Amino acid sequence: MGVTGSGKSNFIRFATGSQDPKIGEDLESCFDDTHRGDADILAEIAETLSATYKNKLKLSGIIYLHRIKDERMTNAIMRNLTMFRKLCDVTKAERREKQLVEERTWWGYMESKGSKTRRFMNTRESALEIIAEIAGLPRVALQIQREMVGEGLDVNKTTAGEALNKELTDLAAKHTEELKKLQTEMEQAIKD
Picture 1 (cartoon, rainbow, N blue to C red):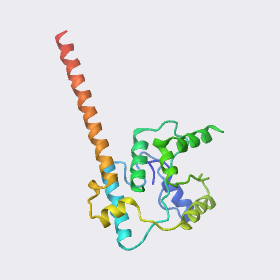
Picture 2: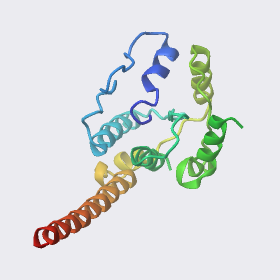
Picture 3: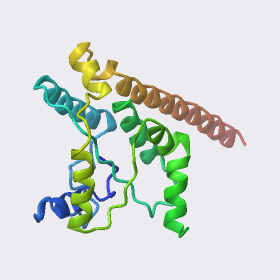
């Protein structure tokens, strides 16, 4: 899991030794999420996780990829981390990694719950080491799996869905306020 451009396709290619999926070299996403909203992506992830849970398959972990070269935590990255967090209950790059892990609103929360960070070194060996470490962990049910399968909740009523809905509602309110301000400024400019 990770935002567009974080290296998901690259990781899969190294881990499998295959040339698929193709690594994006233009502005389109490899996983066809360029034109899809967060709610659609969450719904697809949730349905897949629910199907595995219904079949008594539990996960040992989820691989989340983050571009260490990102110098800012953008809204897209923050939304992605929030959604991910809700699913589960010395160089410049090292400083960013340390900051990412220590900041509770970024990855610090996940680390406090037992999550680990590992560097993917762009090699097959590195990809397989990460997968092997996760494969050796006990299998668990994710919060969203328990909510959808165990409690029968629709994805919008899950903790992850509600967090996404709140963020979208807040964003809509912010845009409405900005629009009102621009309309007032435009009306004032016309009068002047």
